Length: 113
Length: 114
Image (cartoon, rainbow over all chains, first blue to last red):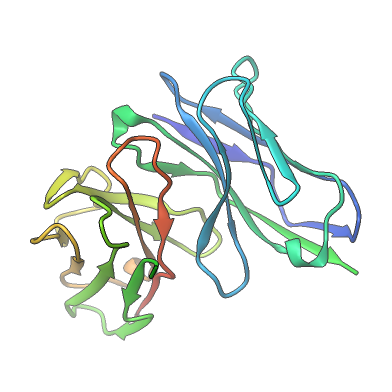
């Protein structure tokens, strides 16, 4: 079945450091890809998405590019802030599966001042 | 407007008891999803409604789990004869009817089975 694999965490960075969180997927057909974020004490929020190959999703300084050739959707940010500390989830969905989301295990990011 | 709401926020029960978890989706959203998130894991799909009908219940782990959405809005997830392994955060999400609509998540119900 479909699956998502994220780099193992936790990840600890200093403020203004460059962030990469790796995500690869296995799926038949043409999935849409997502990054969701869960801030401490809050619910899951959509951070960005891409619906077809070579699309780039971006939001709040975060970016991810849908790479079909490497089945990847790595999350990047050029300069992280303390407020970016959260758990990040990579996910996919397919319309043929009712658009239900298949999530990776999540990556805990801590940014220190 | 209001987001997805879930009640209760926390539920503690004893092994063998019956529990109901409620989800109020965003008004007008026709699609509703239930997920379960165990500690340190990503959410796992349980069931999906389009309107009043369960379009896909393939994620329900066994027949102790059941969900309804009788009027196409509020949904209730029902768990019979709870087991300690059912302890998790149960998440609800809603979206518009098309496949590319964003799913909006509620804050979850933390279920603890003693």
